[in-house]
Length: 489
Image (cartoon, rainbow, N blue to C red; front, side):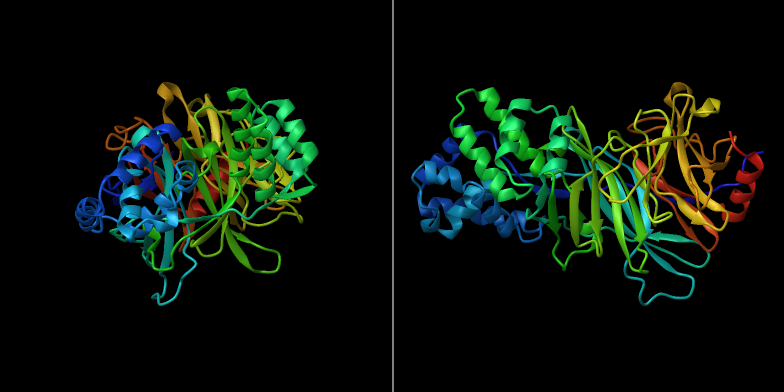
């Protein structure tokens, strides 16, 4: 007999009108042609074009003038090549130049799925039994480019969930690149990305054990000047792209959580940021912060990455290293176990593995944890977010892929002090797509990237065929009882 799971009568749909103003660049030669055309018109003509544009797009974007100025500033190297003094340009001409290199991108227009949920850092001014939540989503727009978007929600003492409306504007974060790189780890990751080995050996020999972004960039620029082969110049660019995978992003303090979007920034994630699994992590000294694992995709290679934040305004982002960080589906435990970080992964695309580390960004020696055991997971088993701690063990919501590529949710129970030991696994799926949930962007799929316990109920947000998100709830005690009764697969 299947567990009683309540589907909540609430569905979070994408907003296809939510747009972000992105920098648009079409190569140096084309860009120079556009710049020269804009420079050829009079000041009055420039003002006549940009003035109505500002009026129109100020209703769609927060501080559109800041965006256009920032995009114009990115063209400074081309201005120098064209003999144009950037500082002498008028305010309106700078804005007009920026507008020709800006386009709107609707971040949720194609798909909206794979939710993760965690406690909001702000739990003030709530009634008894209420909890404020942050829900993250994988949003997909034109060209199948994925980004991370957010909504805020409130759950009350009766476990009624209210998802608050999204804001009117989307804000793109400021990017900060001030990382110090460990040479050994950096070039190990570079080797995995299949960059030319001769280029890597040359650069490695010129760098100190720890180096900064500016130093790496200077060495690469000097090396490229001596290189006549365009293909080899590209190999140097790839090293810089990898360095760009380490960065910090900062959102304005006057933004709502729904206004903030984490959009692909580096070349190694230009085709998408996929399936963020957020977790509130508790340090051994009692303090806490938030992590998320996600997959960066450049169109051919994937790169597991780690995101860290205390407040959801400031985020630090870095790649993950090691033999255990070679595929998708990484999920961090919410605290150290026996003094070490712990992570579930799926390095072979089929089975769940567990691994431990003294450093949160280095993951080696993964051990097999789970194989597909039941017909509904014969193709693949994976995790649906970070393990959840209970008195009886770690609950792991899993996904299984069966016939007709149907994705369903299951659950497993791992030993509290030794999660490499599986105590129980549901013999039947916890949740399967019903007739109202099977149609969408990708049919017959239920998927989640994180759940939460509230009032002794496990609340599971789940994506419905990649087209929207809903919620399910199961009694925690009933789930634990069934997991122990079903035992090990």
